[in-house]
Length: 136
Image 1 (tube, helix red, strand yellow):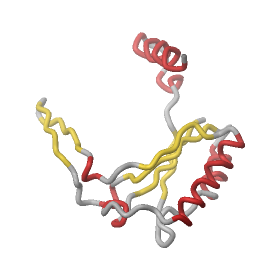
Image 2 (cartoon, helix red, strand yellow; image 1 turned 180 degrees about the vertical axis):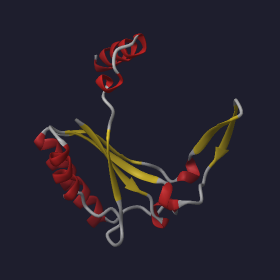
Image 3 (cartoon, helix red, strand yellow; image 1 turned 30 degrees about the vertical axis):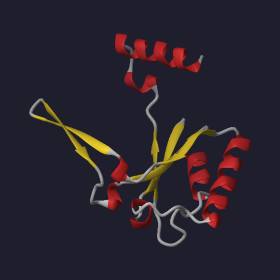
Image 4 (tube, one colour; image 1 turned 120 degrees about the vertical axis):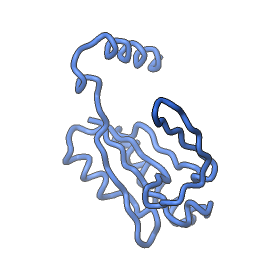
């Protein structure tokens, strides 16, 4: 089972304030533990929303909107993807995640869909082929 640990953005992360050395040390310690346990798949921080954009579809038309975006609580500052045996193990690892803001902070944990969750179809077979090609 794969889970994504989502680090919520803060006013500081959206202002481009870089994490403190203490926070970076805590994060690398945690991610090294994940790697040593063999459960870390990916992890990255994201640039502030001012450097991003959104694409919206309305009435069949596409609109591109450049950042920044106002609602900080709805933005993501980073993520970690882990692969574990079950939900309980994911909770155990998530409970060890360092507070990303060193004060009031929040992370969200969501299970990632597996191809098996969608049943059998030609499109799912094509996704499997794509996964195999990407693994090479």
